[in-house]
Length: 319
Image (cartoon, rainbow, N blue to C red; front, side):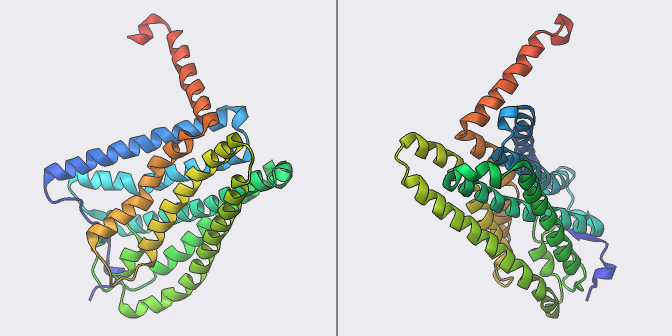
């Protein structure tokens, strides 16, 4: 029987046994990671540099892009390194750091998505009070609350998870350190010590989820009553992408964390974790910019401005 005090490293789940498939997974993850860096980086730069986008909606979108960059950078580079160097190991402290950072960023993103649904609710149902209810100070406070709540949740769950005695070895059935997989390694009676954390976390997550659902039910009811088709189109173009992101994030996340440990299929767990940890940071920029004309125009202007500046460079710098 092993104990957590004697474990110095964990072994992550490999993507494949053959070297060719490992390199293929490395290339796939590298492409996704670069796409996420490019997409979120463009949103960050466009919102920060364009004063027309200095509004509450884009301020929250900037925070979402920051969280997405952090989230995908917490899990994917280590997975890429393991595939490239044909290894599975991650140190005990590295695993704890990965759990804390990932849970912090995912929790903060969930709270931020709740704030973003409130932003859409006020913008569509109470447009005359939008500037008053969502001033710069209120937006900063709500964003800070989302980030701070993420830190508290991560500290609470990480401290409890790594204080449990581990009796099931050190092999983690996931490509990154994830709490449900580490709990499977703990002694059976240890689950009781983690119950009080779930008693706090589940109601809080449920409250945020129901706030999101309530906000969008009210929003869609108001949008469908709009006499102008143009107004309906504009409202749907800002709400539907956000609702899609929330649905993908919440459904896959709940499945990963609330699924009974007795029901475990490594391939299924791997796919679900990929959907909620890797896909959202990569596709969020595309989803939010695809139907948002203001953001698309700002990105186009920024890119065209970069090319125009490069055309004015001396000839030897173009070679």
